[in-house]
Length: 251
Image (cartoon, rainbow, N blue to C red):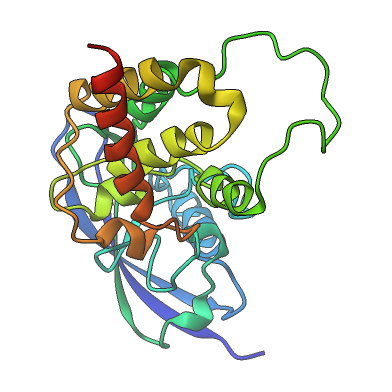
């Protein structure tokens, strides 16, 4: 089986209060079939054998579902392949001997905890502000009991695919979480189950977004380009319409 070598330049930072720096490493005899995270595992095993501190990075499902693996690879959140999380990014998309820079998300609202690990709890607080349905829904109804048009069901499913990884924030020059917030608002705004709290939901979630220090959307589309679930910025337009509707209704 063909083997390859990668030259990595990785952000190392001991803790949240320490100064960070880029450190060079060489990974030899890597398989093109390895995922990027598997390659980092191999590097960490080598570092531990040498008595050095392994590189800290987040991961959980390693199936492209949770998004916790997110890092910036050569300036692109989640790396060069569209619609792909880092854990599903394979080394065959890189050249043998290539130099690859690996950094954490860069946003004031995502403070670095250690190396490639950032605190993304700001997204959780946006969800807690209104991204839920609070009434007792009872048992699961029959699938056809609540009539929902296919177009709305499809649109709701598309935005519900958001995994909350924060790539949209890392790619945006304003560090805006507008795509994340819009996806969560749009999901419930499109379905009848979300109608009861429609107005207060959007106002609370947008207010929490701003409170967390995320920037404003300037509609340039970087977020859509790096979203591993390829969520459209049309969701942001829908969020703005929801804000206008809620503002009028609350007067």
